[in-house]
Image (cartoon, rainbow, N blue to C red):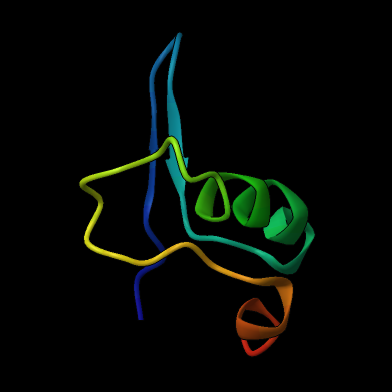
Length: 49
């Protein structure tokens, strides 16, 4: 399976890794982030990732 990785001088897009969990949680649990197709996430819902 090919791993997603796109990089430019100002942007890097890659697959999530376990060390991303805290930043991902902050983003997904922020009620100001809207229109993303998901509900606000709790840390318990995030653990299976």
